[in-house]
Figure 1: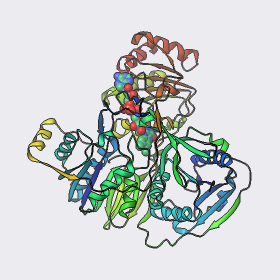
Figure 2: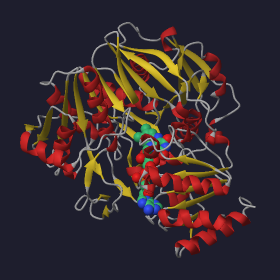
Figure 3: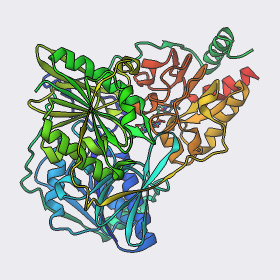
Figure 4: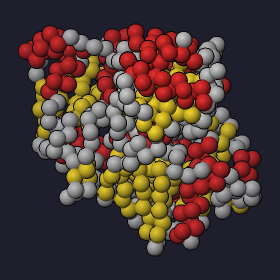
Length: 256
Length: 319
Ligand SMILES: Cc1cc2nc3c(=O)[nH]c(=O)nc-3n(C[C@H](O)[C@H](O)[C@H](O)COP(=O)(O)OP(=O)(O)OC[C@H]3O[C@@H](n4cnc5c(N)ncnc54)[C@H](O)[C@@H]3O)c2cc1C
């Protein structure tokens, strides 16, 4: 099975996010971008499938800046081919509609049996890339997938519902699947393996083609929610805070 | 062109709570625009559920044996056909496993824009606006809902589902489904949740652990604290995905909704998907080193103390 994995870079939420006063949008000048967590799960699921069923894995991202290390890490994990789409500074932000259009262009020359991506990315606002892309390619889409199997020559995607309920959906022919979690936690590779991949492998660079977007969602203004608006904060050393919490739990009848 | 539609979500014959949240939102918007509110009910032998959708002016039922359970491609075909024909101003879907598959697919097929993870909407002077929560709850994004048609996915939190439960009988109409031959997806079977573990939804004291605990060994610290408090350990998604805790312990959108007397969140940032699982803890306390973590918006008490120090100290003091 030949699998393509799409990777989007998103703001690292561990860092402080700021609003740019002149645009009223996210200040991207010092933003640290990291691969979307669920896209890493999609890559893991692709590699697990390849290990089970054979075939190839191709990972594609667009030029969000520092993407090479992520691509070489993908190689170190077992990805056969890595592609970087260039032609624009995507680190300044790109809508999912446009991203889907760009991926559509690249996939036109890249036949495959299965396309995987994270079911959603942390900064999504105008739909999910995988679902938008599927429609552009005329392929079926299933999101919230936690497991993929092949039975009687057909894909079976396990779709996750709340409360631990899942449903198996059978799919005829190629499809785009949005991964919610890989069957196993994404593997870790040591730096030496990544360094080795940097020496041996190369990144295919491709120009982004004309991306036609027909329906765009305007984002006018961003703001930070008022944090700590509600919680009463308890300060002090660990011992002080522990004592205050103990007192609180007793007052509220949580502890005898 | 001022009509609002809600795509009702049914799972295993039951109307999901998010449908009522959407009806509450839709009612406000339809009234604001002086339009009508329609509910699209897709399923098989599900017409009886229409009587629970009284917040809508009318319920449009699409019935077909192939629609008995959610089938992504079949449902998408039905939804887009109905929207194409009626061309509502705004269509609300759940920001859920079912709703997002449909909304994104329909957006692309109809060439209508889609706004995802919306929490609230406004209808003022005939203009519609959305407000979305993104970046793990750290950013609010707003904008106008483009004319003439738009789709949106709705998260809980902005409207009370109770307001969408109206004891009235809506008009019921039947829409015939488009041809469903050649559909490439097929519902096979449900896989039941694993049984045998404690039910976190019924526990009065939950100590919930997040990625901030850093590794599996440290989860034992939290287990010690839960034991000392006479409670049980639950967790956030990354903790479950890393296999540090079993899936039965997951709190949130994809896990369980809990309502304990005490919810002690340890190293949990408070992403919207997590907070969906704790809408009404009697007492919520958060331990998180990041003073800007969204969990402090909902917790009653908080501390930025390092969990790795505070958890053992608290356990020791209780004992
Ligand atoms: C479709 C979908 C469904 C989802 N369903 C769920 C769900 O059901 N439940 C769920 O939980 N998530 C769910 N998520 C994931 C959710 O979006 C968040 O990614 C997740 O909740 C984050 O978990 P966390 O808070 O443990 O980790 P993080 O967001 O990484 O937060 C870790 C926190 O720990 C703090 N920290 C670090 N070190 C320390 C320390 N020493 N002491 C104290 N604090 C520390 C950090 O400041 C940070 O705030 C879902 C996501 C998607 C896309």
